[in-house]
Image (cartoon, rainbow, N blue to C red; front, side, top):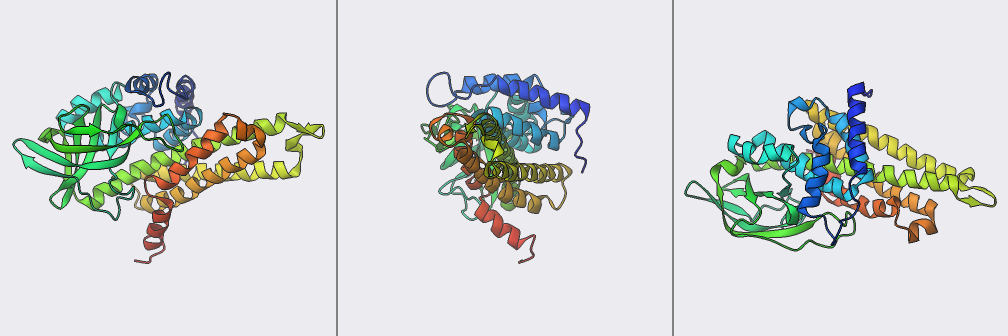
Length: 373
């Protein structure tokens, strides 16, 4: 793996960072980002190759520079980064890999232009989809399918133009592309969350919702397609966790240099200096492991699944440690302020519990990488 970025990749990363700096941290009105606000952010990114990475080979940018750019996006505009990545990198990549020509023309094309917000509805009774089978199912009806079921914890659901709903078709799994406002689709009000507070997340239900055959991805072998969807989601969660660490560490370091105790900056005290050193070590190690996981995934290497799970555990748990230590360094400024470290600490937990949770990841690492099975 080459850790050096080319001049073109560095230029790309700089363009993404400039776009991220223009994105709002909170909605202009209300509590959650609206469809229009998410599209405005997508429009900024559409001026760069960012939205096409992993969806269109003409983007010319690889997975490693994308992970680094996602880290910057998540550090500057965390809630918007979650909205953007779940739409583009999870919904978009499933569509790019498995969509019909009609679906790609109607959905993928505007997605790449920044004119469409997508969502993926996986979880049902529990966030875990590895052990709990879907109750949502599609039944053949005319020239398409009738879909009935319910989903929980769907990022972007209240703001999405199209939702890819995972459901059973016999003993297989398909993704049904359901447009907002479709008859039979009911999207719940956004949930109040501990982190990523501005990102709209909710449950939804479907009752005999008609979906044309050319707007269906699959059906596929359940184990294979769910592993693919979780891989895409876990890669996004790595980038978000890196962003949380980067923003929290940056604020803590700046505070340690400017805040004085006993007439000298607190960074001069060993206790603070050592703590910052440990935080930076965890951030640097997390970046390398996340970059490696992204690189392997792009290559389609057989080691991807194991390395990605290792990265998920290490990076997600380092994010909680780094952001927590940042608040200790900030002391009262972190407790009473509204700076990035406070939000990053709340956001960090999502990377642990979403996608493949760190607990389930450990089980899978034991089963696969350590040869328990």
